[in-house]
Image: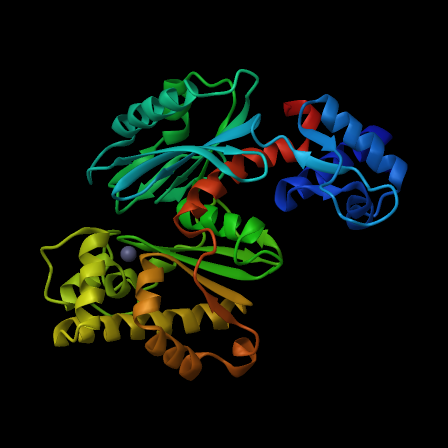
Length: 393
Ligand SMILES: [Zn+2]
């Protein structure tokens, strides 16, 4: 005989659904929660009381509405008290933040990252940033976990960074290293930066409400976070979305992964700087200088931007044909390239995209801007809390 979920399981699911709703949408009236979650008023009241007793939400009167009648109480996430630590390990910088339940960045630190810095060297730097933030913590603050966004291929099961071509990392246990440095008794969840940023934009950014999304993230390399059918597409081991290593040029330029002719050798940092005749330059500032020079009429910079824009459009057309997304978001240096070469990108996409796949696709820049990896890393940590609020809170 098949046994359905127990009363306790249903209650836990409902607690998670309610907490997730106010986490994503902010202050919500009981009446709105009743409609949104399809539960009756007394159930919403009981669930809210449980979450309030656990210190995860507060309940209070709404702001003056001017309407007659008894106003519905408003449920708010305990944003200042319940928080997660979020880290973003990028090619040229390390960032650490404290993100409150509800998604607001409460505190942050940023450090330059010399290229070539190992995981063992990065962990104590991030830990010292967190120790600084801890000194300003409210007394009753509760950390529910930590999340890390890292540029590299991350094994889903344990967060091991298998390969970070642009950081030079191979099999680096960054989550464990950070946990040890920080003395955390909460788990540290690690994800690829494009996946994590896609997660954030899907939860509370440009792609909120979209179930099929490609978030293209660029730094030196290029990767994609893919949301398909409302879920993150991770692949078997967690490595999906390595679109930067699609081979597009036979015997093309050498890629940091060891292959030749990968897509990122045409649209990533090295390709663009090479085409602009600035092979010796490095970093985002150097890229921005190329876009700026193109804007001011520098012929070689204009050719470089146009070529890279063409390549970006070809690749996006392929991705649109394969995944049929309703939105493509350009993040990191892909945002800069897209904005500099939007005409090329759109024209290639229109030529090479299948008409049916192009019907509803929108091209966007991130709504969360550069915070997307931090907000997404925090979402990784909050996911555990939202799955079973009373177990963690
Ligand atoms: Zn490659």
